[in-house]
Amino acid sequence: MIIQSRLFTVSPLCVCLLLSFLLISCNNKDEPGPLDETRIRKNAKDMSPQEMTDYVEAILLLKATPSPYSDTLSYYDQFVRFHQMAVERKMCTDIGVAHTNPAFPAWHRKLLILYEDALSEVSGKNIALPYWDWTDQASTDATFSSQLMGGNGDPNDEYAVTSGPFRKGNWQLNLFTISPNYFGLNPHPWLVRNFAATLPNSDKYPGYPVRLPLNADIMGCLDIEDYDVPPWDCSGSRAENSSFRFCLEGFLGMECGGAQAMHNIGHDWVAGFFEVPVDSVTMTPVSSTIPYCGTTFRDTVPNNIRVGSMEPLDVSPNDPAFFMHHCNVDRIWDVWQKIPGKEQKYEPVSGAAEGYNLGDQMYPFNLPQFQGKGTMNDHGLTPESMLSVESLGYAYE
Ligand SMILES: [Cu+2]
Image (cartoon, rainbow, N blue to C red; front, side, top):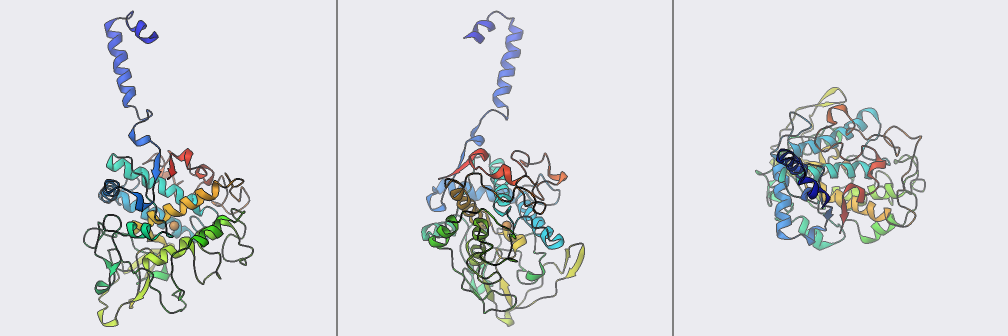
C-alpha cells in the first residue's frame, strides 16, 4: 500500500524505472526460484518414472557439457578428476585428502553437492540425488534397472555394461587409473561391472566374500559414539580405530587389508574382481604411459585379471552408480548426526595433519583455479561447512 501511494506521486519516468528495477529483481539469482527449493533425496525405489528420466537425462547432459572448471574436461568428467586429484595427492604426498581420514564424509558431501548443483544447472530442473540403500533389495533392483544405472555386465563381453543409459557405446570413460595397483586391470573405455565377483586371495586381490552391507552392519556403525579417533587409518589396532567414520568408510570389523565393509565393500560389490579367459585377452592398455607423482610409469601389466569400473579408487566416479552409492554413505552420516549428542560432532578440531581438521580447507576444492567457478563457493570448503544437510539445502526422505 505504501509503495502504491508513493508510485502515484512520482513522475511516469520514475515509475518506469522503478518497475524495470522490480522486474530485474524478480529475475535476480538471489530470489528463490525452482532451483533453490530444498532438494529431497529419495531412495531409488521411490522415484517416479519422470524423476528417473530427469535424473538420467541430466547426467547424460553433464557428460556433453564442457566443465566450467577446466578447458579439457566435460562437466561430468570434472567430478572424476576432482576425485582423482584427491587420491593422487594421497599417493604422492601421503597426506590423506578424501579417504582414510576424518574428512572422508565431508569431502564426499562437498563432491555430491557440486554434482547435484551441476545436474540442476545443465538441466534447468531441480535435481535431487537418489540414494541406493544397500540393505534393500528393491532399492538395489531400482538402482541397477534400465531406467537408472543399467544392470550387470555381459559375461560374453568381459562384463561390459550393455544395458541402460550408460551402456557400452553410449557412455565413454575418458579418465583412467593412475594407481599402480590397478594398472592394466580396468583398461576399457566403457563401464564394466561384475556384481559380487571375487577371486582367490593373493597379494593383489581380496579373496574375501563380497556381500552388500546388512542392516546390522549399519546399526553397528551408528551405535559408535566417537566421530573419529587417531591414528585414523589402518596403522592402529582395531580397538584404537573404533570410530564412526572408520566404520562407515568400511575398515572396522575386519583386519585392515582383509575383508572390507560398508562403503568400501559397496565399491567392490558393484565392480567385482574376476578373470577373463587368457585366449580372449585382446586388451591393449588404453594409456601406455601414466603420469604419476611427476614421473611417468609404463603400464605394462596386460593380463587376464579384471576389476570393474567402480574399483580403482581414483577414477571410480566414472561409474555414475558411484554417486548413488555415496549418497547412501552421506545419508548414514546424516542419520548418525541426528542422534542426540552427536549433532555437529567432528574430530579432530585441530592439531592433526593438514586437511583433517574441522576448519581446514579441503583439497582440491580450495585450489585457486577453481574459485568463483561453477558453484564451488556457494557452500564452504571446510568439513565445518559440511556438518548440516539442512543448511546445505537438502534433506533425506
Ligand atoms: Cu571417494
